[in-house]
Amino acid sequence: MKGSTYRRCSCRDPKTGKELGTSCPKRNSRNHCTYSVRQELPSRGDGSRRSFARGGYGSLKAAQADLDHVRALLGLAESDDPEGIDLIAEMLAEVSRERSPLPEVEETRRRLNAGQDLIGSLTVAEWLDRWLAGKRIRKSGLNRYETDIRVHLKPHIGNRRLDRLRVSHLSEMFTDIRDANAQILEDNTQRRAAIDEMATVPWKGVENRARRKAMKAAIDEMPPFRRITGPATRQHVKATLRASLNDAIGQQIITFNPAAHVEIDPVRKPKALVWTDERVTKWEQTGEKPSPVMVWTPQQTGAFLDFVAEDRLYAMWHLIAFRGLRRGEACGQPWSETNLDTHSLTVSSQLVQDGWEVETSEPKTDSGFRVVALDNDTVEVLERHRKQQDADREKWATAWVDTGLVFTQEDGSWLHPGKVTDLFERLVAASGLPPIRLHDLRHGAATLMLAAGIDVKIVSDTLGHSDTRITRDIYQSVLPHVGKSAAEATAKLVPLQRRAEAELAARKAARAAQKAKAKTKAKAVSKKKGKGKQPKK
Image (cartoon, rainbow, N blue to C red; front, side, top):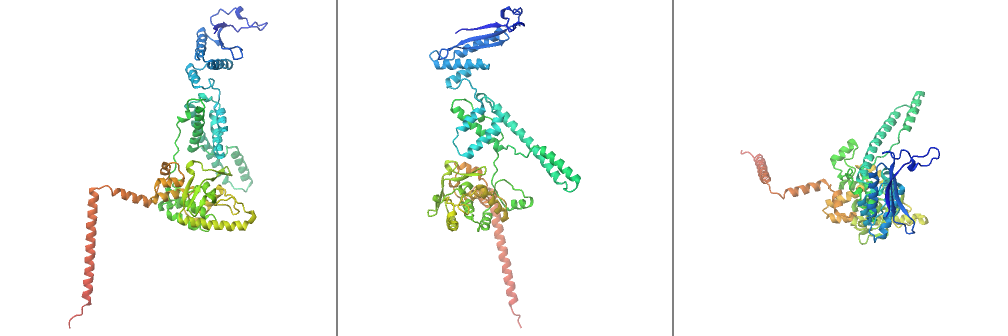
């Protein structure tokens, strides 16, 4: 196909405004003109012509290099591949129109062989919108994805081309997020200090009122209190992007997922700690919890259940404390899946909170669908609860809302998971026990099962974990006396000379103490007998 390079003078006649072209008196000057290229491209299916044209080259060598580049791209498609020829021709025509850089030959060859678009004009924002629109998951999950995309991904990398997204771009994004966190913390500190200072200014007095007014105006000009983007949120943002880019790879839009290779700060999940006497004492003195995840001892759990024995939702607290149901699972448990005759219940639904709205949903994972065995005491508790619910149904008569759930409001309607959490926190505070979260009752159930010597696989199945490793990772802490017993049993397995000598010395000391005790007792008896004798007359 025809293609050529040529010189071009852009000078114009000052009177007519037309280009002078070859009549320009400076045309023969060495650096006066620029060079252009033109390459005919294969015609379209309807017979219309198309070409690649570009100008502004400073030298003939540069123009010739681009012309050779265009011809190399045209040569990528075999002569018996009309579809490939048309794709490359359309790509070059678009590059010419948009005046964008010529694509690399090898990258174009790879895209052509992989069946991908040769022109990667799709932006990250456009792809994320398309990906989110195609997701078929529950509403709360969609909202979480949408928040990650709207708040973090679009503002930082949304305008970048999807096929040119690199690991370095993501590293810059997370660096910017950390920098923003530092600024948020500083702004929050300044605003809090200003509010605290204003609180010290009295309300009475003209000067004081004027000062308070000025200080309030200054506070209003400050940035509002904001939450930082913590490590867990950053990990979720990364996971959202990684999932979307994996789908882009599956659709052959890209071949590399930079989100799988970017390194960010790991999330250190807090370990569950038991409220020992020492920790309780420190909490009473300082008000500080040793860990965000705290577990009650069996005695503390029993004290709480005794304290709430008359609460209308006692059966729920009891079930979570002993069987480890999640909050949403307990709130959404139906009577139809609760068989007290066989001492079991099947977890098949839950109530999930989206903002403040509540909706019913299936368990999040396949492992969430499970059968949970019930002990005799729990069965009795649930039977009493059902009798009370039957009495409430009769009391409300036609106003009763028949949801079919085990735990409901007084009129039979759904329990709001958020309100259940608030109620639990108030009950804990009123009991005087060290604080735990409602979810920590579930942690406590797991710890009690492990402490009772139940196999970790059974504990994992009861809790609805997909893998026993999750159970081990979360519930590494056990009750102190159980840990000590395990340590003693382990130590006794290893024969040590010093231990044997210590045990022998301990036995000798015990025997010596026993002999001394016997001797002392014998003397006392002898003395008593001596006192009892009558003197001879």
